[in-house]
Image 1: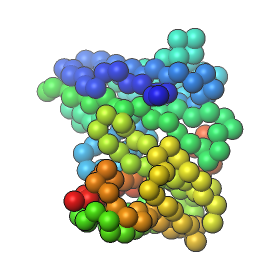
Image 2 (image 1 turned 180 degrees about the vertical axis):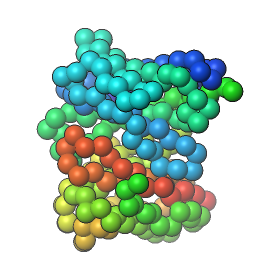
Image 3 (image 1 turned 120 degrees about the vertical axis):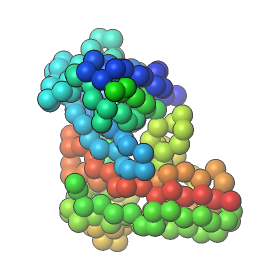
Length: 114
Length: 112
């Protein structure tokens, strides 16, 4: 069973517009959420995170929103740039889970059109 | 970038042969992880280590073993490779809880 779900395998947006990537989770014990970005032939790189005590975290063009009641988080990229074209993974962990284990979603491929 | 290297970067092998992948870090991070990435599955944890000689299983550990004899090295071994183990393998490291994981560049393994 997939505890972290990214239901949109792909997304295409125009340069300069907003990109919204969504992620849903089922495990109510998850209390820390992260977004990773992955280019082809490279390892994932950390983008932004949010703790369950917050509902929003912002870093430059990237904002992550967390709705705990809906078990939903989203990543907003404004404005989108061609260099943002990549696969985005959301991940979640639960305090007390040994080894700081992350559970990843299946990824959303973002294409930003010039 | 965190100092993480993986070797080899690419490997083609035959079914039934043993394969060892190496992850090396220069960051002195306590935790090390092995993931595999497959289409439709995202990243799945194979094994992880929380210190020298301290390892535990992840979500998809069958057919894999690991060893960590030094802080900087984490080895993943496929004792007898199968075609279902064809994948891209990523090593990751992290310092502690609530710290993000840093990933290596990956190893593409093909089992014929």
